[in-house]
Structures are given as C-alpha cells and as structure tokens.
Image 1 (cartoon, rainbow, N blue to C red):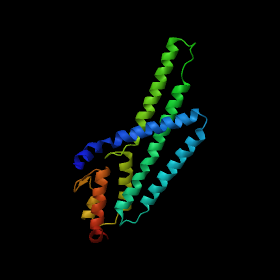
Image 2 (cartoon, rainbow, N blue to C red):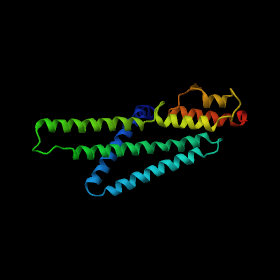
Image 3 (tube, rainbow, N blue to C red):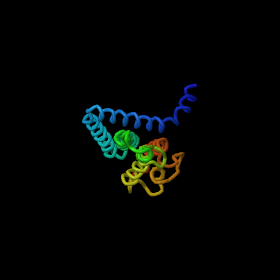
Amino acid sequence: MLTGLWDALKGLGAPLRALFVAVLGAWWAWLWFTGDGQWAVLVALGALVLGLLIDYAGRKMPQSTPYLAINLMEWWIIVPMVLAAVAAATAIVLTVDLVAPDTASPETKQTVAALATAVTAFLASGFVDWAADGSDSRVSERIRDHFYERYRSSFKDGSLADLYVYSANYAGADGWGRAARRIRAKGIKARWSADHV
C-alpha cells in the first residue's frame, strides 16, 4: 500500500525544489524590503558554505566508501538552490523597484512591466533548471566527473567495478541520476575487493 503512495510522490522532487527556491527567494526579498537584508545575505552565505563543506567531505571519502561519498556529494545541490533563490529574490526586488510611476504613459508602464516579466522568467528558468538533479543535471555530471577522476586506474580494465564507474548504462544504472548513482555505488562497493588493483 505504501509503495503505491511512494511511487506517486517520487515525481514531486523537482517541483518541491522549485517551490522551495521560490519561497526562499520571496522570503529573502521580504527581508530586503523590511530592512533586514543582511540576514538574507548571512543565511545565503551560510547555506553556500554548508553545501560546499559537505560536498568537500564527500569528495574526500575513501574510495572504498562510494555510497557515503555520493550521499555527501549530493548535498552540493544546496549551492545551485541558494543561487536560484538569490536570483528569485533579485527578480522580486527588481520587479518591485521597476514599477513605473502613476504619471508615466501607458506605453512606459507596459514596457516596464514586460521588462520585469522577462527578467523574472530568465532568472527563474535558468537557475531553477540548474538546481535540478536528473540524469543529465549539473549535480549528476559533477558527481560523475568526480567518480571518473577518483577511480581512474583503481580497477582492472573491463572489470565489473570499472563498468559501474565508466559505463553509460550498466546493471540498471542508466546515466548518473540519483537512483543510478546508488546502483553504481553498491556495485563498486560489492566488487571492491575483487576488482581493486
């Protein structure tokens, strides 16, 4: 019974991240307008440092612990999410600040409204997409590239562990999305003793 519910909720990861980014951006914009913008800046910097430190810890894990390394490196997603929230806050502040005065002509008001909409759409689409975690996302590519570098010359050529790292699709791990990363990590761990050189 819970499996069906879990399957239904699996696809909500990306929309929930986008919602989180939008709400966080709105909160930071509100702090800016209330004169507490320094708190928004401090929270953003703290979150950036946290994401980078956890990612660094993951990249420094021993090669024999790929699952833990992946779990820690996935926290790097905080970095693009914070940057997306900063972009959202900036778009909100710009939209409010770009409101044309009542004395402006209707053409000027329409132009300013269109400019604010264009800037908001550009920032939202660019940064929210960057904060995704699909098979071909920036997070997935980053972890893949780290594993390629980290495990270079670690396994016998063509061994099963080598295939888990370097094959595009092996043993159910298609790409480097979240589920595929776990399959790869379990395979590397299972084959560590037999395939490590």
